[in-house]
Length: 61
Image 1 (tube, rainbow, N blue to C red):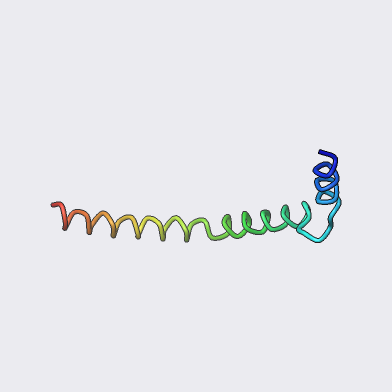
Image 2 (cartoon, rainbow, N blue to C red):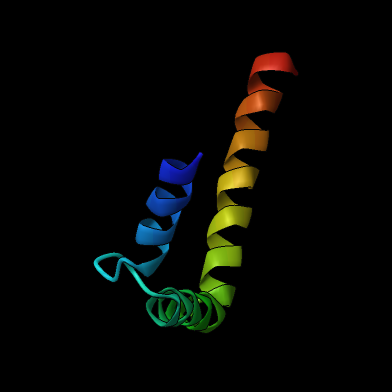
């Protein structure tokens, strides 16, 4: 049990991985990009769903 505690502590203190700040910055950039291209993304999804609906009507209609 003592070794497990030491392993967890050494993992927690390790600074080789991504830090919280880097993760927050990446998420912020992704959100900003999504907001900038929101209208384009919504239009693309609507076109794709419309095409899928048309194809479904051809098959089942």
